[in-house]
Image (tube, rainbow, N blue to C red):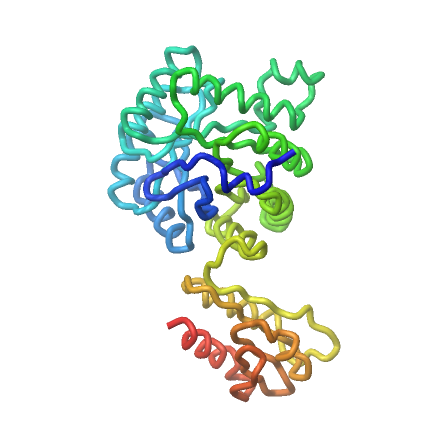
Length: 356
């Protein structure tokens, strides 16, 4: 089983200007969805991810041209960049030489020892870490056979540690481990096992989680369950769609577990027969219009003026709707009464006042 507060005792790894492990704040990552050789599009997406709060970004490197593009991309971005390589060791070496801040490989699919050594030497020369990535969809045949042909939590851990040992045998220990699965129970169990077997920091996430409507649920359950056990040093929410949504959901998971304070958290009542305003519409508008704010703030949108301020007394600011009017409150105390048409703007004014 896992050690208590495993993330406090993991090895500290540096990725650009971001620390992973050793009790460092849990970082939120994402991956570009652009063709990496399209430098303008990739830079634009990375900079948008930075604005959303992303701390580390990963790019697919499926070709020599993509690896070489890193050099120009790095000139135009601030975020640490991870080069994601499968099979071809030359792309990994080129990416390291081009300025990647971290390499993501699976040593077992890179090839013979000479190829792996070349990648390790490139990482050593540039002082960058390697993320060893293993997932349930690409578990080695040998490991599957050892587990009666099935993908198991134990098999995932075995594969990850086998790949780590390949790097350790080359005297390389600047390592981050990633074990991912589409099965949430398997994912949780694998992290419980590996946390008791390694001091390397762990990158967590549910692989192929799906479209946002289902992927958010799977990711929140899986990542959240692991984090509550003191396991996990960095995360990515893998969604089919806009990578900005991955960042938003990642922070919501951390905030819901009180593991991070980042930006505005909008809470709202589920509504009932007493509701006099369009809570969903207002809450959505406030969430969208406050995404630029980085300062922590809890904002409540409540459907009635009878219970609203009292039920949301822990919120920093909020709105409680009445018939044709809205009550703006701070920490449970009403400070303004405004007409229904002015509610959103009045609440935004109060939010801006509190976050200046």
